[in-house]
Length: 156
Image 1: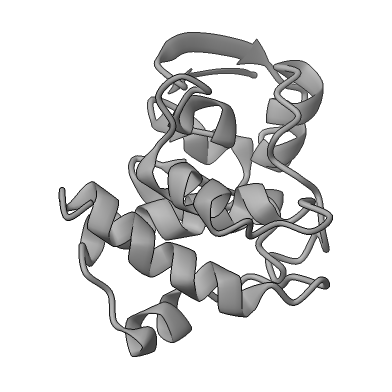
Image 2: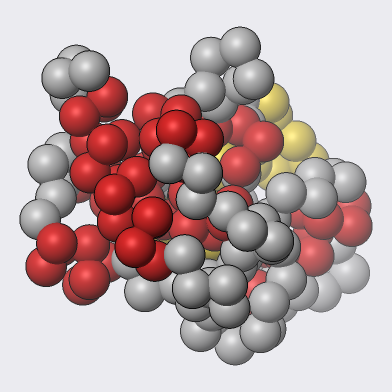
């Protein structure tokens, strides 16, 4: 089965044996983009979060067949070292990660939240950022989310 989509601005086609294969494995194993992480495999932890047509999606439970014709963004496509996305910039400023394993998922979930709610409240963050971090850097993440909103809104 051939699946075509745009990922990080590039058109890609992949030949997949089973359309029910999770998008996560196609991205990691076929396209060799390793930033999106495997955590639980049950769409509970959020380590595998990426964007499909601008929506935060847990790619470990998103069948690749549903990616057909879609626009996908992974952590590799969010920003660059020279021009980081506001969320990435805020994460750096607030020294959010400890081990860092889950952080790409948190960053992607936060970027999607800021597209819908440019100035999220703590309640908005609690309702929308439900990923899991074993290092428990939630306090720094909350500060970074508020900072990212200011950066994105031009309120440096």
